[in-house]
Length: 245
Image 1: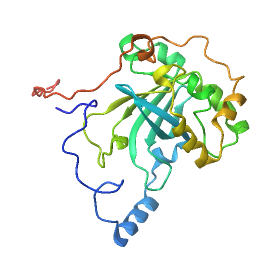
Image 2 (image 1 turned 60 degrees about the horizontal axis):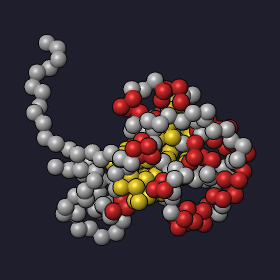
Image 3 (image 1 turned 120 degrees about the vertical axis):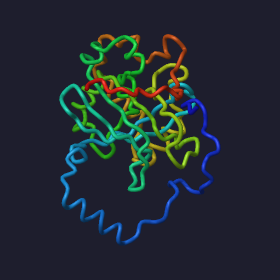
């Protein structure tokens, strides 16, 4: 059965980066515009931040990708992110990340905590950026983010050439300042060139951001145990009786 650790075979033989399908017709454009005018789209309008950063596959950490998180905040302790592979109009939705405060994280069961990663290094190193937002304006949010934890599921592994969302979702980890957690310099440089920024300069400017007093060893589980997590999909007997009359 499908696994996040194996490439589905055969991969659909379509060219280009976009998924297979016909170009949108003028009629479809008109229908979409009309629907957008008549519907509230409230969850989408709650998205208030664009974050560009990097992520690593838990089961295959040399595989690293640039990610674009579109963030909405449900309350002061909980955020949810639609994750895309770029900030272009044709960007592909590749996953979802949930972000919680340290208070919420520490209340999670220990087994659940293993699936989460910390954000302190990612923020302080300058890898986590809000494109085109001046550091002075974004600084309060960076202070908050440095103390959070995230759980990121990738549902479309575009970096291996998948032109459709195939197979099982993959658990993703955040960059860290040790061995396999270091992001490749060429990826960082490509991002910096696009937004005309310097990750090294951002790192220097964020030296005074407070780090958490304690980062749970259950988060970033691979650092302590040299083990990642992969999802295997297995067939199962269906439950045929409803839990209520």
